[in-house]
Length: 269
Image (tube, rainbow, N blue to C red; front, side):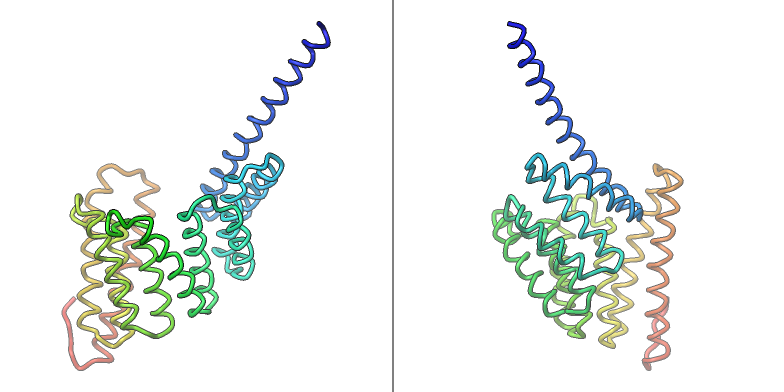
């Protein structure tokens, strides 16, 4: 009887240890992404690597997948694109759905774009797009993930110097984002970012009139957001916002400067 009781206690302790490890793995993954968003890359990588070990030990697919993606993101954000690609490719093995595969393809597209291999970036973005359009076919592809992929394609084509293609994909991203955020009249940072990207693509193309038009729309949305964010946000959020709006205005003024120096037309600010 005593031996049986000891066995039950050991079994409970073993089960509790397994659950605790899984919870630790999940919390470490969450912690890693929080640190990543704060720009604390060494700490984020450490959290992801610890989570990955737990995921491997417990054979937890989800923890392994998001840990590998996280490590890839750390490498990508710190300019180590080859290492990022290695970890994203490892993560594909643990993708549990078509959406997770598309997430990896998007990350690979971004890494190859940052690396300067624009054709490879376009290849992966199109793989992601094919999946997302099928997954969200019932809602006609009106989903943030589809918009993000269109925007990625726009970035890759702009970096490649194919500005008409870039504009085509940016406009597709903008169309979806305006519909996604229709309930708030399109007053969202992602909408502002897309207008900004369109403005830069037109600037690169030499179409300064359209460049100013789209950059100005982006700034107008940022200004609308500013009016609201200072009513409810923390001091830290306000500081981060000020940085983003100043960057957007700088890009707008840069384009305006190009209009005045490189074009025979002058457009008012």
